Length: 92
Image (tube, rainbow, N blue to C red):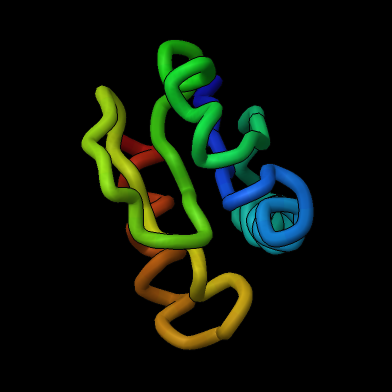
């Protein structure tokens, strides 16, 4: 089963909103996966257990797993493209 890491500045507010939207989307798609949540500073502690990152902002560092900017889950702008990227990584 795939695991998605959702990260934001504090690991609380914005990432919680993204997790809620992501859970709804994955449920609609009939996809079961794990979601971990953390702050941007904690990504390295989680990346070895996760398949990719959905982050609330642009990351200034490369990680060993792919990352997707998930701000569209908050703004609605570009959300379909973000969902397509997520599905591609989940099915890949």
